[in-house]
Length: 213
Length: 213
DNA sequence: TCCTTACGCTACGACCCGTAGCGTAACTGT
DNA sequence: ACAGTTACGCTACGGGTCGTAGCGTAAGGA
Image 1: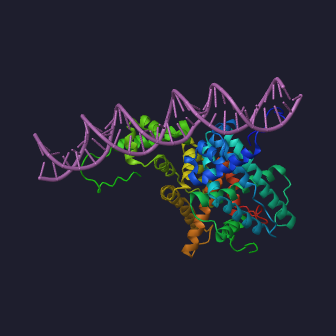
Image 2: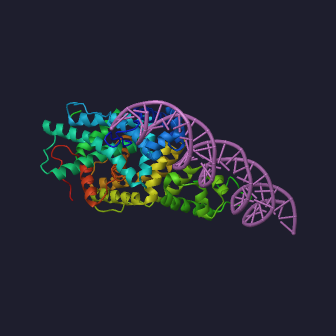
């Protein structure tokens, strides 16, 4: 976020929160219409009904602005209890795919990641506002599976954390790659096949001990 | 590639192949130094010792140029027989990771993918010059595993193809996500853990029937 | 009321874009 | 050898975006 700690500045005119919202909304809209490369600060300012200088007072540039504009979209991901680990995984895969189908998300995510390869602070910004926030889904899903007895209870906290990171990268990575690189759809069939692979692996006999549905 | 079919134009001065190579090389260099957003056609031309107009005679713009400049990097991936499916997977994961560690690759791949979300022809260009070409690794690895008896021989060709696509997305996606989004290293430990997950899954008892290290 | 900060607006030099026009270079067929 | 054809390097151009500075005004706090 554009650091707006109320304790830092108590005096003077406060920053307009409506402007903040309008700018982020305008950024997403502009992203849909123009795409990343043709998105300009001037255009966003016009759409938001705000002066261009106001944008630069809050964000250093295009990168930071877009990260903030898109980060909130990921918060809508949820993990309703579907009764089994397989169903939960499949559900979150389809949800994540639906999120990435939205033009502002797919465009912005990849573009910002691309830019972050040369910008350490931007990379951390992405990590904090997007990646770390969504690991909650993995942790929640695993917790439930353990309660159901579908997964062994991890004793070593370090190993447990590493495993959660791994699973997160595998799920998110596979969906992103399928959708944005391979350019193929993520439908129910694919989600089911992927879930099966994730739970059972492709080792010998994997296809025979298939978990429920 | 910049369509250079020798049959189309037999007469006149031929296009300089040295210039082609110099331009692609200069593009990669500029990508390393400046990153995607600050890379300009003029800069590439200067580095290549070529007129800017020459670039536009061969490529429509930045996107197409960068795709061609980076595509060849992926061809260096190989799959030497390491004796087991697990070892083969682990090997290709590390190789792919090493490729993505190179600044020109990581920057370019993500940037071009981002741009492709709004450009159908660019998406196809990526699919053909990068994605499809590298599926050979999956097919080769599975063929070997089947010969060793590690995997069942697929009878249905359609299913077999779908599975190959899935595996490709999972492997490539996980590595890309780990490196570029989560911004964590892909080392031997991670590769081993990932391989174990891919082969055995995370279902009940998966960790006990681990395949040969 | 004074102080402080945010806002909208305008203007600016710097840079990059993509194209046009020109003269020259390289290769081909007769 | 010569004309025909295509690629090249170079220069110049209008159009657009960048990021900043300066100004007067608006909105809160002491």
